[in-house]
Image (cartoon, rainbow, N blue to C red; front, top):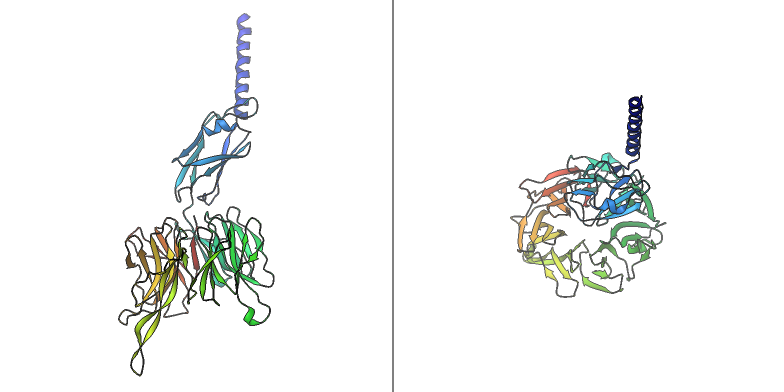
Length: 455
């Protein structure tokens, strides 16, 4: 009898233990990963959620991240952990992220996680954006997936877009609609919102500063006399969202920010570029006849743009004799006011469309020879290596013009626009040259234009 009672007691204890274990397993906190389906952006947080409030100190020591990367941890709430990259995640790579076993909950009975949770996170490769009127539809903004050649439409403006700009971290896009207003596109959510209502005026060519503080754009009145329909550059601090015209006399266009937040604009009445400092109100100007678009050096110390030069005795008159031939050279204008520098060197060339690599080593530009034996209808892609002073061509397609150069964030690839100068009915094309590989350039898109990389 005693043995039977003891066996029943042991059985009850065993069943109670199983019940407690089952309850503990059921109530133990669990971790899950909230990951975007299209891959993590290089500056985007990794979001880990828990089924119960957690003790932060117990999580920090159990965070798994391979390969190692500098991060900071922040709790959105007691159940949501944000793993923020202090430097961009390695583009195109795969991370292993996890929470080790034993991470304690914050509420009684403070049960721990019972197993290690591990996940694989894909980091998006640097995407290339472009404008594209697909199949004759209104021009929209697209993301090109270079790994498989597919494209993804990012905007749905009824009448299309005219231009766009992207913040340095790639998370925010600002674009101008055909109707003449400025919109903000948040890449995390894909939502577009009206940022600047330009009323009866037409706003275009938005340009965001590298630190994301300011947005500049051209604003052109459409009412009144035609002679007054000239663009003026406006700007706003994105925190306040209050637009204001640039405090410069006359019309202005082609806004472009430097890394030091100096805003360069072209002033056609004065035939000069002006770099304006929004913090001090001071400005520096240099004369320029062409007004063609230029580029800042990455450190903001100088601006490079085309300028008219004369090739001595370059044009033969029908009656005999020679005239100087107007040409275009790339000029480096230092912001400190020292003498400009002619970067083209060769007098018998026509250079335009400068674009500096992110590390400041290379200058990509479009060049056409003016010599009779080497003249071509189109401009070819050339590189200037600032470290050695060496010039070299990248393309040899005489019937095609090359422009709109866009460097990848790591400086290893160069995207550009190609157009047929012999047949203007042919659509433009976006091409990609991988400078790190000994392979010919590849065509990415027919009909697209305005390529731009984002991290």
